[in-house]
Amino acid sequence: MTGFLNRHAVILIFPVLDILLNIVNYAYHLLLARQLSSVDYGFLNGYLALLGLLLIIGSALQWTVTRDLSQHLMNHYRVLRNRLLAVVGVILLILLYVLPILLPFTRINLLLVVLTVFFHILLSFRRGVIQAQERFYALNLSYYVESLTKVMATWLLLQYTNVTLALAFILIGMLAAYLVSLLQTPFPESTGPTRWHGLTHMIHTQVVMTLFFTLDSLLVTRFFPTFAGDYSVALRFGQLLLFVALSLSQLLLPRLSSLNHQKSFHIWERKLYLFLLSGLACAVIFYVTVVPYLIPLLFGAGYDLAGQYVKYMVLVYAGITLIQYEALIQFSLHRTSYLKWFWGILVLLVLSLLFVRQTVEIWLTGQAVVLLGSAFVLRFILPKQRLIAKKEERL
Image 1 (cartoon, rainbow, N blue to C red):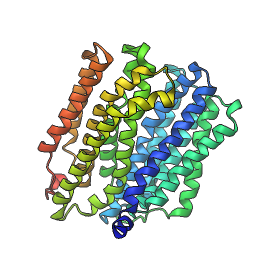
Image 2: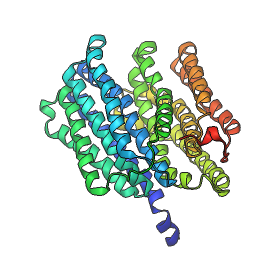
Image 3: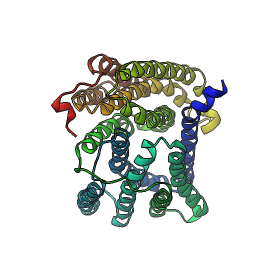
């Protein structure tokens, strides 16, 4: 038993640390929600939604570096970094000029968002190296430095906090994590040709996956404005399920990538899938039987409907988690053909959000049917073995 725990300590502890990290991030939102007016907090969430979309670039970069280093693939990362920063810089300058015309955004706040994105890209190169080396405690330290710095700055200056300072605290946290990463690992070795395909592939995947769990958050305020508060509380619990799955994915990507040419890959992947199904089944039972009673204890008596919504929300996020897992497998095998299926799922999800909305419960049921049904279909139509073909080998 001791030997098992020693060998699997990271897998057992890392998700727990990730859950605690999300609690720290929730503390940031709780502090700001209490300090800012509802209007200012709404503006802040607009900036955070934009930031979350732009941070996809760095997240995709981290996963790409992890996969390529795990498979000993060469890339000229310094050239990639310089070109990526140049391209992103042009896009962000355009947004800096256009967005204040279209939305009630200020350029000083957008500048803080731009700087955060730049440091996140630089940080992601080094996080990718750490993840590829399976140094998960060091990776967790990087995330904790970023979040704790942000929360501590918010807490210390809470009485002076406004939207601009809140965005500045995020930038300070990102900068602190980047400075720590300089001590944790060197920039990845740059050799060979510059490869873009893996990065653009992962950005494409991340954009589609992000839309899966952001569209309903945007539309609930339009279709069910009086229930948006209860829905948001239930959403927090649903997203926690996905966050745990993503933390496990960070553990699994290096191992999956290193096995992608071996015959044992298919067997190993099937066992992993069954383990994931078992975990999701336990999560569904827990969310249906326990979480509805936790909500009033954590959020007070004003969110009675959230306990009802969370029973449906867990099924929605179980479907998203399974779809995310299928993307991880295909990414490890260097396949891109699955993306057309993801766009098809997104179309079905949009249709369900627009037309199946008699009540919140029916609305959530429609989402769950689309996502769980799609995850089931993907399991049988997407190949799980390495095929040597030119169109699959392009990098």
